[in-house]
View: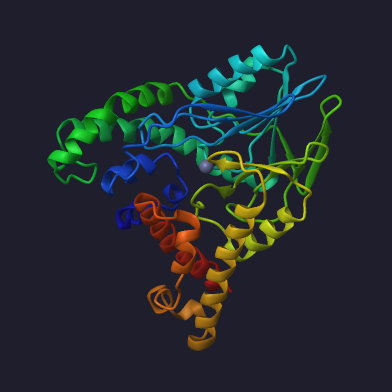
Length: 367
Ligand SMILES: [Zn+2]
């Protein structure tokens, strides 16, 4: 995924852009091309549902959505990547209840969790869109540009692919051309959808916490510290012992393209203090204990400690490069715990650790 790095670092505005992940994927090895998981709804308890969205082979997996229904109103966690998926979710919510969605939380600023904001606001005009204050700042900074540039970039990518080229001009192999044929319909559908997209920022921000009673159901929104982003928010239902974690937890392989790993460890430890039986991760299936939470915390802690051990040897990391550090970090003992014997997952794990070590080093170098 080296090319991914080039795409992401050429422009700081793009570094955090999920929109370009498709372009990055096409330039790189396209490991996700075969993914065709279906939309899946899991009932967590009466009136609480987790929705995993389908993957339309466009290279952009959508974040999970959680629906919490109270006696008076509904609280939704994350509006996912595609407005059309958000419309599907809203139609399903209306089958579950005649109560309006009163609150929509954006767990963090990445657009695979909030592109559907406007769709929800159109459907429920009195809706409050909630986010931690740093998340709103990042969304205001990054999303309008994403929405403006995105369709042009995607149209250019589609044009290149139709001519048998990758976005960087490289000629596609025969195998890649076949994969592209599967990909193009989904991409064209996504392009049409993104041309009509409008940025909708959060309308209600908080710093540390926000407790909301939606009618015989208490919803606690918390910022437990930085992790995946500066403004990560989680949702905790104390009575139901349910935690909605956002991308602080992504299953089965953590998301590590950006973030604050040393603080992330602490944030995960704060999460582990909550009395929880069910965890909805930002992506992937519902978890029924804290084992994965502890595993991710252990992985990040090990990466941070190994980088710190190396920094003790070489001195201020600000005067060194990632090259001076990465050879001293070995995270392979964790590989079977995350990936088992699955070849693709093992490759995904290895790719993840490359990025993890990089963000650990970047965090350590910021003195
Ligand atoms: Zn995500």
